[in-house]
Length: 281
Image (cartoon, rainbow, N blue to C red; front, side):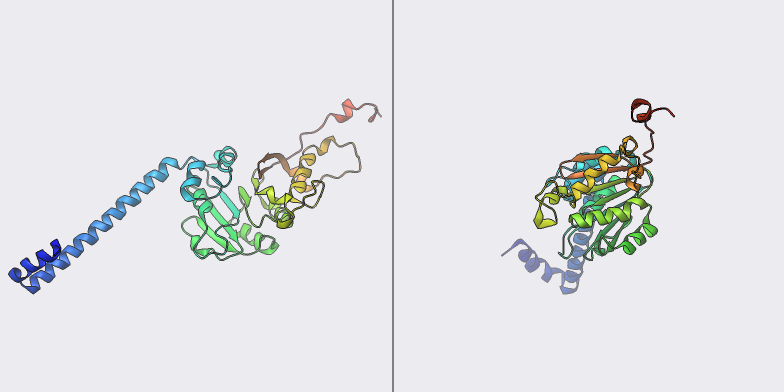
């Protein structure tokens, strides 16, 4: 016989069924209150822990389980490039919410961004319905990352964005299409980030094993490095593109590229230096 059974056998006959029922109900209320208090303490502890690591993207990525740390080593680079935005009222869009098509999965990186940017608005886009990730300062859209109308609507409703991250299909054609639509809509000093560029080299994922293939996402991004120096081109028929005049820096890491937007018009001394090519008139 258990201790509770012994208590019931001894006490109930003494105090009567009615009193025994009231005692049991009171016990349940006490246990429920204790459980609620334990939950409050746990939430407070979690909030304190999150507050303690809120400025460290590597720790936040590990806490929320995003593959930006672990499967990849992206968090440290995001820390370098986004630290200056941390306490500003900013907006960030991430293409790809994660969890693939599994119900109730995804949103880890969106929650990470929310805690890293305490005054920021976080927006996600995914092919699957990920509306369950929505909470204060997090909004989710469903749709195709190459849909111009949808992308422009997201920017109109939630932008302009300080940061746009493409962690979507990782298909070269999709990466290039999304960039073409969204980069002109990015804030004038914003950052555009492309993740998981390894797929550029994989034919099975829309890339190419041929390093000279100009259709891949990495070829597209590499061409932008020439555009940084368009003012030095000696081809007088060349007309700079929007990307040439609005990209001021590119930072390449393993499977990760940051594109800095700005005004790329520093000027050139080529005519003063290349006197034979450009004789005085």
